Image 1 (tube, rainbow, N blue to C red):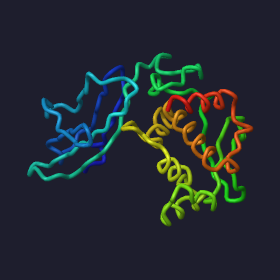
Image 2: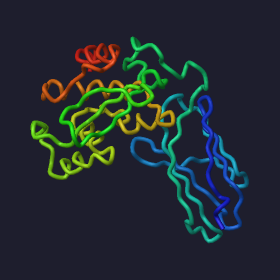
Image 3: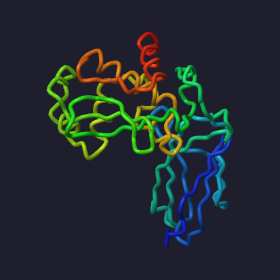
Length: 240
């Protein structure tokens, strides 16, 4: 039985600790780290222990790993993919001043007062800002509009944008128009910090709204956007 052989991870300052339970089936494991798009095996692992510490990592950076479990005949019996982010566990992990929402601080985490979630609508035809029931800022996106043909969406992409019951209208649009420049994409940034996002997420969001506002002015309404976000949009026009 592998039910007790569940991987657990804890992110600490510049390192990640992996732990797992015992199993009479699994006899060996292999851990691999993603480096430049390829998974490379980590050497020096003591197979007699149920813990391994990955050290010398950078804080606030996502790291992707794969772990493989093998039985006594060296047959793979379990595989897990996981992403971890080391952090100091202090206020230094966060950027709270919107004036510092820059590329230099892109990996720093956000607190609730600057988090902007996204919602979909099938009734209205604009991208606009509003407040949710808790008073937090949200950006709302419609289904596909004919004016968006300027971005040359494929028929499949248009179908995804039409599906306002999912997050696809947001992810499809942002992936289409943003240049990630080798950094994490906006979805990865959104999931960081238990879906609390980081500064880079806001930089991407500002870029996205700027691009749509430039190409389809009448489809974007930033009237209700926070003043700090409007300032960020202006800053990104000259820095991105």
